Image (cartoon, rainbow, N blue to C red):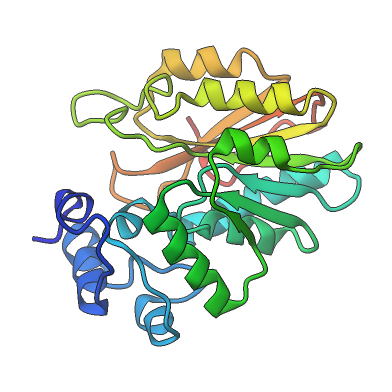
Length: 260
């Protein structure tokens, strides 16, 4: 069976054939087109030359989720006003989330960082084939944020989704203190690097999230809202915490998902 253990284990850094991608989607989610990325179904993106590693097929934000995240981020960004924002993904992976946020925010500058050699090489190749116009740098997130130039007055949007590792298990809800690195550490770096910029943080969570770890995180924001996108079976749905630093939006709700 093509399950997570196989794609995150023996096939972790292997380029998948189209049949493997479709089989994973069918056996794990009942949908051979589940791993749709960059606005295309597997058969379409594979025909264009795009390739995914085993780990990326499991870890990537598929189009349906990316579209929802991008729409919610864009709605909140518009509430901030000003010129086109700068968007950064410190742990870019496939860069599909970055693609969808940029798609909803026309004119924004989108930059991602990816440290893993295999993932970086595959994603850089995919972005080149598709001509998506995203910037991708082969650096650690701290070094990447340190070299990111954001003009004063511009809104900086950060999609924060560090690898979960064993932070989420069948027995335990997602503990944001146990991601690699902890989400709080990423937020601290963002706040220290951009102390005078308005920040909009989009933090990926799960419907099974440790409420204590979430509360410890949201306590430091000026405003936050968490929702869950019910697009998978119960217990497998992703969510998003939208949060702001150095500004407060004049809205009470900003998400398409149900409140957590």
